[in-house]
Amino acid sequence: MKITVNGTQTEIAATTLAAALEELGYGEARVATAVNESFVPAAARPGQALAHGDRLEILAPKQGG
Amino acid sequence: MPVFYGTEIASPLMLGTAQYPSPAVLAEAFRRSGAGVATVSLRREAAGGGGAEFWALIRELGVRVMPNTAGCHSVREAVTTAHMAREVFGTDWIKLEVIGHADTLQPDPFGLVEAARILTEDGFRVFPYTTEDGILGGRLLEAGCEVLMPWGAPIGTGLGLNNLYGLRTLRAQFPEVPMVVDAGLGRPSHAAQAMELGFDAVLLNTAVARAGDPAAMAEGFARALEAGRLARAADPMEPRDMAAPSTPLLGLAVLE
Image (cartoon, rainbow over all chains, first blue to last red; front, side):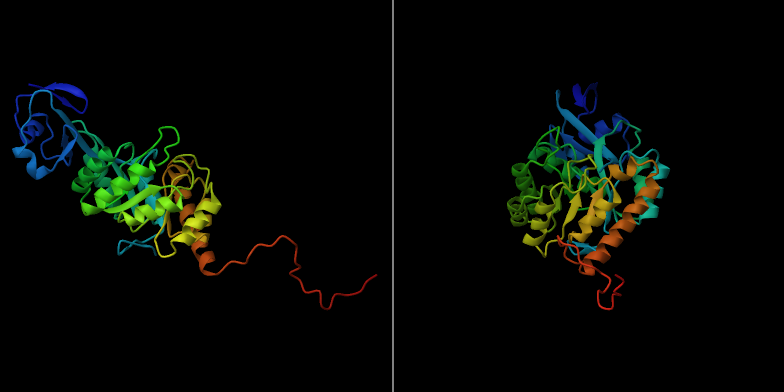
């Protein structure tokens, strides 16, 4: 199915958020996630289903003021 | 040293981590300034991106980390970003920015109060980036904030303390509330001035990161903050309009 990952249309086979992160190559990376503009805690990723057209944001520590 | 939400920090300097010419210069700026807090952000990460390296660098600084909600223009964006930051950075401290205008980067006072209330109820320790408006400051305190962070001038301008009267009034209006002048400082003299006015700390980034020698400028800010703190504690003289001789007139020779 197609979802949007950080603003880019992406084809994935995974059906959960945890599986999608693994498939997309994030592995154990220190990231925070939101699906359709709602925060999904790390502990909830295995139970977070993904559907066609979902919008996934994957954020990591960056420089800031 | 300043105490925020019951935690004493090592220095009145809170320093941003963006725009440095290199990670090594960033680290040197923190080392020479003794800054007690590092501000950080969350941004999109590609698989295998640089987030891990940056996080390792920040951890090595040994300072307290405060994530921000920079770039958020709505309450929902800011609240969601804060929750994501709490998980990634492992802290309930959040520098809350709800921006009202893209050109001035002025805080949206209405959204700021609403986001502060939501985040306080969610257990965050909110550091609101606000203006020097005292009514707004009062609303933020009512919403649960125990710190106020009025701007000196718009973010990134380096103009210093744009509204001395407003800042002085805000300081006087809430004498027991820890306050940080956040944004708009350009030179160490601006930081000294903030401390002389009775502010507890300053938060800045661009003035150090974009200086020709960021590490030296960071140290300059640290020394200015110490000078301002000492001056405030030493009860400065009141300015006056007319000259007053400092050398005694008594005993002046008559030579004509």
